[in-house]
Image (cartoon, rainbow, N blue to C red; front, side, top):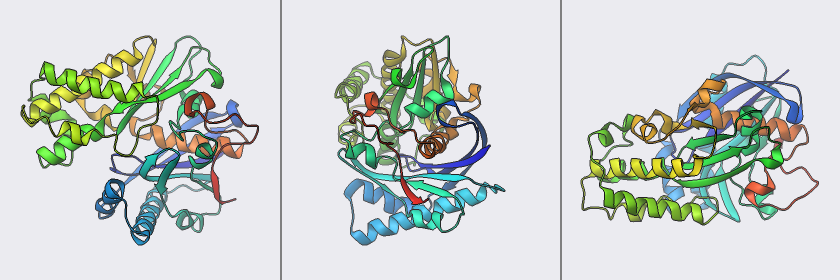
Length: 349
């Protein structure tokens, strides 16, 4: 039995999550059980990281951001108060993603010098080096957690961007597909921050008071569908910020309501053929967004807390790499086929 910790800092920059799991077995035969989740707010580091993601920065600023994420990650891992850790898989904070370049900030040495276990970092770089997009990165972990012998399953992550893992019934890993669908919470948060002076619209409370404008909904849907039609991973400059801030003909509350309807329609179109749709990510706490999606449940019903899914995925991918399994799927990221293990950089063997 192994205890593995996965850490994640999403594009919405809410905080650093550390998730502990217990693993029984090895490789693709592993069985996984959720243990605990801790989350540490980015605090004073948030402004710097947002600036780096928006405009880049000096070498000193990038290094300062990496140190800050490393220290916050260490705080989250320590808060788990685990008696034993066998491995730690670190994602870091994405501040730039436009393949073939992707930058996740974290000073992994801060964690590597604090724990007597294997520490893995930079999960996307080897995939990128093999011509892949480096994303989506979670589909193989989703297969481990959510595969079903009877029903086809779509796992929908409602994060800064919406991405979907598609798992056919009784699937092998080679049957799994996945893709980034469209901007999601980043788009909603842009309106909240720029037009309402709010960090985000908690639970969709403002959107609930608005009325969707059919014409604006169609405009937004076209932009979101265009993102999906390009068949690439989404990242830097894909938040549709410039587009959405031109929609001044309606009130901000109506704009938020319209965005919710458009995102929901895109998710429904992409998942309508699946027997089971599982929602995860911070957007699940937005009742207005969820009400626009014809879903059957959340990952919570299968023992994976909504906020823990990505951290659990990192932990699973870390364990798979240690077991000699490549963590990305060629049919998902577009990377070259290889007999070598495509995985992480070892901050500490």
